[in-house]
Image (tube, rainbow, N blue to C red):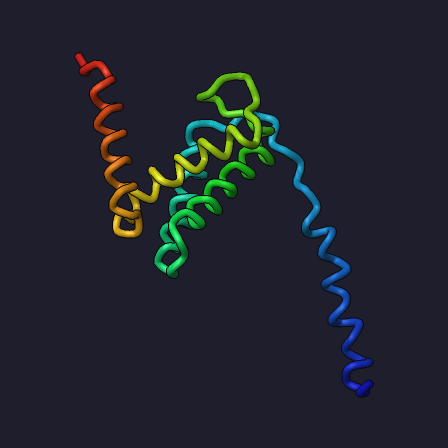
Length: 138
């Protein structure tokens, strides 16, 4: 073993020993996710879809990763609770389904060129349908 390697090995190993401390879970936020927090998480997920799509990553993979990111944020920071949904904490599967939908909708808004045409059509149809279901403002 070279003299340089023997002297620098402790310097190389020290960061690895500190990793468990850096990766330790942060204390969970006690409150349910607010509308503003959900909007932020959705935006983060959508931006991730846009960036990964621009880098050539498959749409399904991009959306899956973004959805998982959102779901894990809500689970970790808010124990799966969302104010808009009610007092019941959502399961990870429920969070994933909603988060994937949020990521798709956000990407359709932020980077529509990165969303496949068939998905954009479904998003536009869903938005039209939702708009038709709302009563007209007085």
